Amino acid sequence: MDFNLAEVIRAVAKAVPTREALVHDDNRLTYAAFMSRVDRLASALASRGLGHHTERSSLENWQSGQDHVALYLHNCPEYIEGMVGSYAARLAPFNVNYRYVAEELRYLLADSQARVIIFHSAFAATLDAIRADLPELQLLLQVDDGSGTTLLDGAEWYEEFLASAPLTPLPTPSPDDLYILYTGGTTGMPKGVLWRQGDIYPAALGGRKISTGVEYDTIDSIVENALEGGMRVLPSAPFMHGAAHWMAMNALGNGNTIVLPHNPTTFDPKDFCETIDREKVNIALIVGDAFGRPLLDELDHAQHDLSSLVLLISGGAALTAPVKTALLDRLPSLAIMDGLGSSETGQQASQVVGAGAPITTGTFKPGTGLAIVSADLAHRLDAGHEDLGWLAQFGRVPLGYLGDGEKTARTFPTIDGVRYSVPGDRARLTADGTLELQGRDSVTINSGGEKIFAEEVEAALAHHPAVYDVIVTGRPSERWGSEVVAIVQFRPGFSASFEDLVATCADHIARYKLPKELIVVEQIERSPAGKADYRWARSLVTNPDEESPA
Image (cartoon, rainbow, N blue to C red; front, side, top):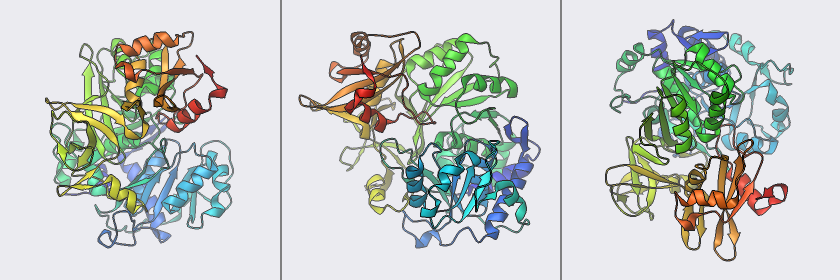
């Protein structure tokens, strides 16, 4: 049975009305209070004539029949209200990267055909610079962020908008209503991935029983599970990144409490630890080494009571074996789950380790619907097949990319009568069913006729104790066609020679994969969600004048 997300969360809220749903400092919303605000937002949006217009059966997979809501916000309760309130009014919200400059924001809002934007006051100037170019953008809702910025001309204060419309009967939501997630755009232009809510709920948002992986078949079974909830979860990454709001939506559907750190605009490891201690957080999310290494630094120089924390989840970027090992050395009662998924597949696989267990990078236990298909997309590869194939997902997969029928056909092919999502990662399944992830094909380096996966070289370099962060990319080479270049940020007070780093790499990967050059930088460029910015990396290695080669 398929469900709409607003339907699920409403049922949970009725079952646990007095339990806290969202906590940010002194702002503490019970499930009943949260749904009251959700319904006010939904009613106000519906009163402006916004919502659902065309049935799914009349549309192509890359088309939308709903009005779209841009969420241009730092992490805050209003972000989650904006998602659920939009769903309740049958609009489709989507994520906006708040670091975009005006040109990038103009592209995103035009590509998404946004009718509504909910934005923090801090972003008013950037929005004002481009809104004349966006005739479809009709409703601007400004959230006061304490910055003192005045109301943008033509906009409405979010809180006043919620109070502006009386509560009225809302349209009946459908599992066919859209969930939209824009890709990060770190290797190309962002694309809007369209999911039916009936598919994304089990694929990534908590619609399967954790113990068995079996989908919930009734609202009653969802509610029964939520009654046993009450865990407190801290998604430290920006909600504009799928992993973070996936965790938040999972929390709501399971009757848990979302806790935000005091400063939700950036990852502050001290604030992260203090929030866990103060709010007795049980589960927390980080994004790979970009968050893991600063967290280690904080644990090494300050005392924090993290005894309530039982599970640390990493998603969105690699958490390498050295960082996992170091975290478990400092927090031996903790379990670490490395999650694998993407905008186009949902959650696909995981690796859970505890202190004393063998720790690796890039190996996972497959989840429901994971498959490997051949390089030519002609057939599926069985476990143990020696060929390297494409990581794929079947069953619960997206409809397509908003407005792009050609790319939809490429990424979601039908093979032997089964429709797959194949977003571009290379992988294989070993004979015992273990997933070995090689990396994203778009950042693969073809050198001397061999394919070298950037993530594999990055994981090898991360074993050197002087390395704080690293990105690997390719650069044109007359001899090799393309050659491997490592961009490294050293730990404060540490350094290493190129020869030392290559020697460490040689202990973990074949010699043909070793970097040909090292560029040392003061700061690796990553998105606020911790994702590597490979466009920045490629630009740097071809124009390295501003940095110092080692």
